[in-house]
Image (cartoon, rainbow, N blue to C red; front, side, top):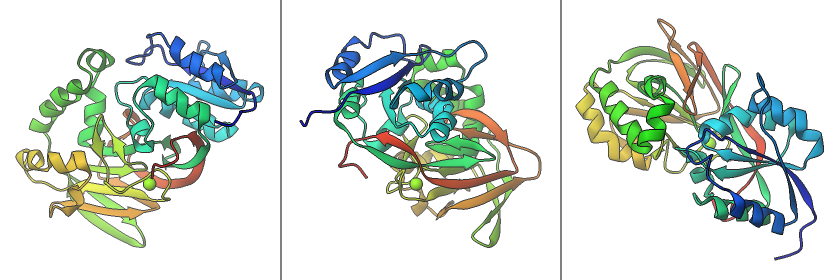
Length: 297
Ligand SMILES: [Mg+2]
């Protein structure tokens, strides 16, 4: 390994993340051995993660964030605004963005990527001004995020998604939506529309098996199934990212789209409800630098 010049890193660990309270001494050892000086920081009262990053950006060369996809999402605006490269420590319930980039789930191995890796540019998705790393959804999974409490996430982990998902699935109805993209408007009846930036989301689901977070595309799919049991048939494909092959799934790539519904529906970005329809989506190519393994994507 070639010698690295000293770097200063803002280290922010979300203590409420699933593994956020665990000791990260071994992680710190890896980083300091690579001449990374760690400046641990936490948010002040009434301050969000992006504000913290912006406040401290002048003192550091990179930001290392420990948490899950929700934590990264909260940091997105600050990372874009400051241009600080991002190191990811996967400490959340769902670490789908780390998976998309091939960052190992073990925090110590993830720290080794930060220690020796070169940051690469990744895209972000944006909907009504809110950024997302993985996916934004309207319909079924937005309801899921609304009902999945922090308590359930901690207690059941990935299984928690399954239990709540099954409950919502049983009462799901199709809704009408107008989708404007690439000079056309499609009128659809759907259970869920998902707009992905990366490949993985929702604790092991896949937007599209070939999608990457640096291909310049949003991958869109719409579940146009008329019975919940048909969705069960689709589940293995939804996990692999091959759902676009089914007749009752509409799937396409684009860089910009607008989704309108007859009454406002919540939009889930990386697991949090952040905005409502009408929802204008666009890709923000090469928005953030992230330390990632070189052989991925
Ligand atoms: Mg993409």
